[in-house]
View 1: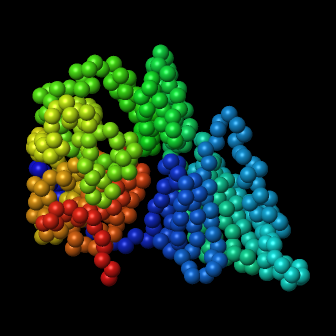
View 2: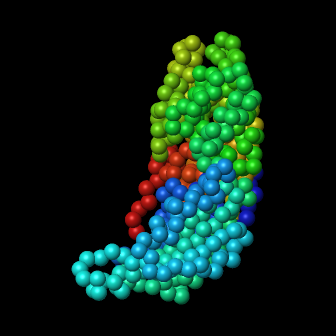
View 3: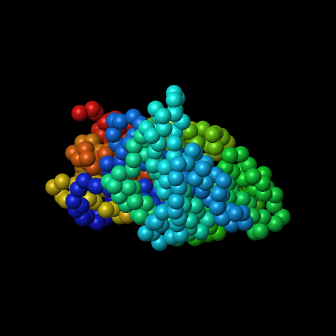
Length: 437
């Protein structure tokens, strides 16, 4: 099934810095590995990795989408008096040396305490910095403050300035989810004026009675925000075309589609919700097997009613799908990048995306080829439908790096599958559990 290898070696070295992406990929930033970064939606907190409580300092980055029709700066929410109450002093500071508009304020404030004021006045004061960076529709508000009774020393300021000066905004910031949904509705109403289009559920829309989940559209759009129309319109058009299908297209005969039925992996939780009326088999790692009819430029899922009409058992459907997958792999040989050398292969990844790349790990022939290359046990990550990564069990540091990357790709790529790692062995496929050293 792997017909061609493009091999190169890669020297593994410890990284002094790690890069993280802001919400909706609005910006990227580098942080030294000596700090702890936590992110929840649009708020990112950076603080030292120390056992002291509270931390000697903390820096918070808050990213917001600014409506161009409203005030450019939501001043009340991000004013000095709101962010740092009981201000002792405040003055304008030097702006950051970054290629975007920004402002800075420097000051100190007082934390409330208990007891006579002369006992806590000096001890409970703290220093702070406030930066506001603006780029098109994105506003990044950054607050840095010391722990009560402490100051922001030169080393802390230098480290935090280095982080902020590494901020680089996306050339075209992607719309946040709700703004994206409203723009999709506008586009749908423009191109299909005779059809009813409305918002539906948490992140979906209803197009003339058909519900369309926008999650995968949005993930694709995040990778190419300049191509909103190209990402969205083909999917909407496919739904409209399917609504025009006749009975023979909606419920085709088995003879017309038997050589185009293929297996596919799908997140178990999503399948239970959005594909409950379609044929599926539970698998491992939070995944389930579904079955699709390949339509060249798209595919559609096999409905449970099709099995009844075809008088076909689940076992026969699965056997047929795997035979077809072997044929598909022979007709579409997969080119790969192999990291390492012949004596010590380390990692393998496909060079090109393909909607059936992840499904290949269902096949025993593919298992055999991987085990011949890497040894009896192979670690595999499948963060999304079009991509997988296989890693040798002999390189635990590389496995750790791959695990982190799989989580990142799962969170950012379209058609996400699972964050968990799998292991291929003589017994088949199971979920990988790292042993404690």
